[in-house]
Length: 284
Image 1: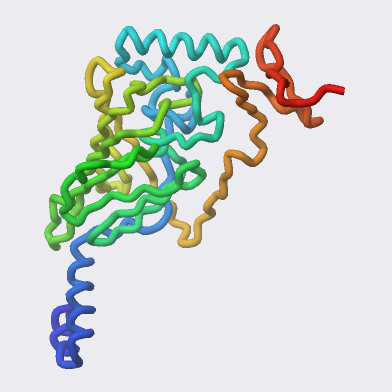
Image 2: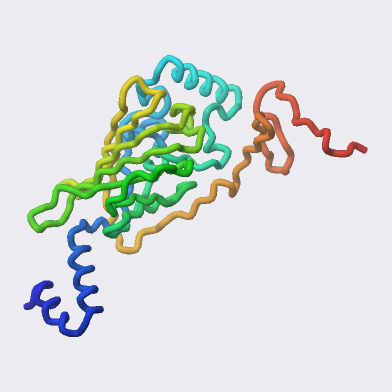
């Protein structure tokens, strides 16, 4: 039996293309294989099963987020508005991308690892792709605002075979906003200057961990949780297609949110809500 090094030595004589191929294979062997589908592990029986920051707690107030007094009020106002039929501080209900860190809570994920970039494909997300650059680049002087942010990663902690086992990632903005952790409108700071630090690794039980910390001006201190994912043994897993606009009955006009009924007519969402201004429509 010939090892990879012996095979490469034999084919090097075939020419430069073979040498490049062998070098690429040796380089890729330094990275872990996280192929397949990874499904989120969420504590059952809690309010807000999936999209929340801490998967071991109920969403909203149950998250026990270390909010500043200013953003505690934002949270309270959001929940009060929702109780009256409004959207509160929940922009994703308008089909805006959830962005970070909400997009890190999708139910199923797939990791495609190359030496230069790790791609995270997010099942059922409004923003289904993350790019984590691992080519040694520095932060660009100007970052275009986005919901997902700009992510730079570094591989570390090689195992006995020399294969990396940990991916450390930092994600910065400026972000587009507003953004919320979950459907209650649990807020991130409106300045959109969040920083996210993540540590990805797979433990001995084959559980993938995303230990994520949020540094944000809406918080009194950094907020850290451990998101965990279980590998799906099915080599051909089912991937969901999701489009927020399909079947979405929320209609935002100006600053007011209305509801599109089953018969195609606009309905109020709050008691005594005024209809939208129709001054641009001719009345018979």
